[in-house]
Amino acid sequence: MRDETVKHKHTNSLISERSPYLLQHAHNPVNWLSWSPEAFTKAKREGKPVFLSIGYS
Image 1 (cartoon, rainbow, N blue to C red):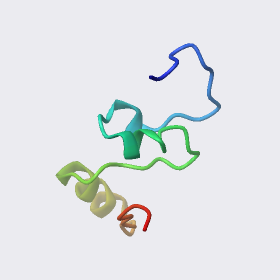
Image 2 (tube, rainbow, N blue to C red):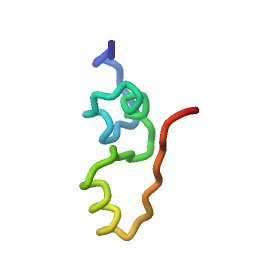
Image 3 (cartoon, rainbow, N blue to C red):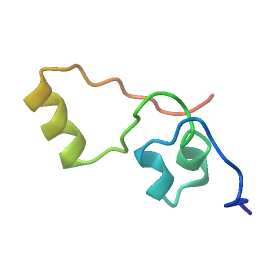
Image 4 (cartoon, rainbow, N blue to C red):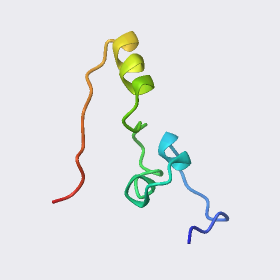
C-alpha cells in the first residue's frame, strides 16, 4: 500500500499508472512515459529518441 503522505522530490507521469512495476519508478527524476501512442507522438514532435525498458531480468 502506498503512503500518500510521503513527500517526494520528483514525481513523473507514471504516478497515474496501475502497474506495480511502473509505480516503482514514479518518483524517479526522469519523466518516464508508459507505452502509448501519446508517448510516440511526443517523441516525434520533440525530435527525441524512444528508450524502451522491458523491466528487470
